[in-house]
Image: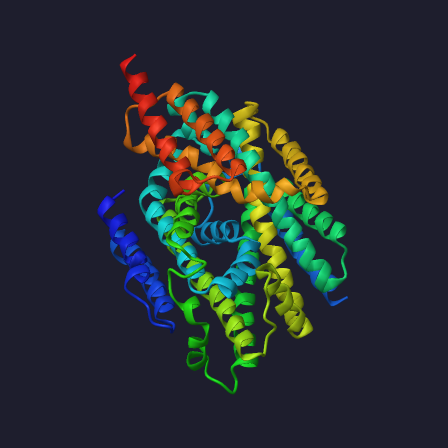
Length: 47
Length: 457
């Protein structure tokens, strides 16, 4: 497993705990985007 | 009446599929892993339907309703963790399985750590997963009782019959094909539920304008999703793809390497869409509660049953049936995998007949647990993902470390399992660190210390 890739993914998922504090759907959309981008990366670039 | 008709149609379709899948089963390889001839799309759907249980439409809707966006973060942490692990390990595990003829997860472990280790694994996963399935059945039987008039006991019996019958008849192919149909059904009904709630709750008002009313539920950490709680829940789930045998065994089933990759990607798409739908449904309902158009519910597990009661009868019945399907797809996959592990790894049987007998016995055990509803059953089911963590060093060891043999493997499994049980029943988190993290760290520590001592000997 690529440890750097794992670290980047985990750090990206943790971002809302530190940096997103607005009372709207930003955290929700951010997490959806991170998961979508990672899925697209695996589908298009990883293999 | 409507529910009974829908249920009969559902049972007939599933049984017809299982009977069709029965053809050509001759070996354990055919029975337990579909002869390694399953397409990428069917592999993805059975992987998804096995993973996403009734917890999603009941537990996660309620969790999103009660705790806000943190529920999405928790579930997506699981998804990205699974994608990370599968994108690396799935092709390797599939190839090893094909080259060496593995059928159970224990076959891979046995080759490296000796024959005793899979026997212990079979016992641990049975202890971890039988109560987990029983709790699922209790949940869906209660929902059916409330929404259809079918009694709790009859609901349990109906579920048990379908679980055993479809797995008994068609083995993995029967389970996978019924999973595929039910997986699509679950997704379609989740979409329908979100649209219905949106049109009935937000036809005159804007969801995005009203959502700030949720306040702290829209950010993390909040009073519910503390960093500690988030870590304690996400650690065991992050490694679910490797530690849960019912999904691990599915890595053997695709027909070729292209199908393995297709399985991982399509599962990711299914998981992402389903997670977004389910958590969005919970948030929609919570905003409606704040606006007074949906009751404010204290018990989060009552959110979905309340919604079912407010829906048009047809949609309510179909959504209720999709929750039932979600429980069945998870349960029969677990039962089939446990049957294969107990049959092959524990008893050393090469006969399909043994597995079929075990499917019946396991289903009876699950039914008895579910009917008796002992207090500790819920606690054991909550503990299941933590209990399974002790297998992780052994599985990673196959791919990454040369040290580690039968002594270190046995010691890791037994000590990790005992620690998980002890911490859970003592209800303590030493040094404020969650039990799942303790089990995770201790299992790796014991594995490496024992492996080094074993290596020196």
